[in-house]
Length: 233
Ligand code: DX5
Ligand code: ZN
Image 1 (cartoon, helix red, strand yellow):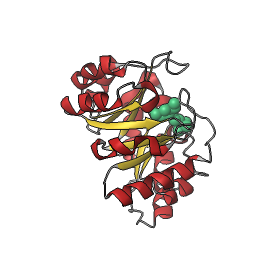
Image 2 (cartoon, rainbow, N blue to C red):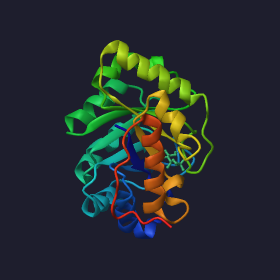
Image 3 (cartoon, helix red, strand yellow):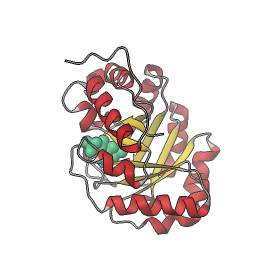
Image 4 (tube, rainbow, N blue to C red):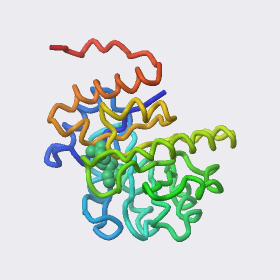
């Protein structure tokens, strides 16, 4: 089943609870939280205190994408704040296995993230211990960037590895997922679709989340649930 994972990076930070509620009404089932430190990526966003507030604002799982150096130093703080899923970058972890163990040890679901230029085959050994693999389809740091098309080959390769190894981790894709790219992303084998600009960018998150999820479900050959609250012009 495909799932829509709205990324709050493109939401109005002064009204996060309302933005998240709207994206949930539109069909979002996991909330993606982009954590940036101004070192690993050239931008800064939010940290554990905001995650703690979000925890009170929604019952959906909080998927924290750590774009930070030395992530091990902050894993306990994210657990304490109420994060459910935590993913760390392959490129930021000298001891990736240790980072994933720490996330597990704190009762959260571990994920590993690959930048566009990082090969999928580098993480074969740790695949049995992850809940999800996040394929970046833009260089991390900003919302609203253009989808990098060679990411589709990486999604296909990862789906092939998952089959070969008999594993069940989820494949998540982040960056430039929108109406014009979502079908190919789904058909390549991804099921967790992160979308920031495509959900929040136009200021109508409920409507745009619903439309994007419907497009994803069509591409996956899944039924599009009739939603009685949907009002079409
Ligand atoms: C980028 C972030 C993304 C971002 C995606 O570094 O990791 O989660 O919100 O934004 P869009 O969907 O606008 O490309
Ligand atoms: Zn992200």
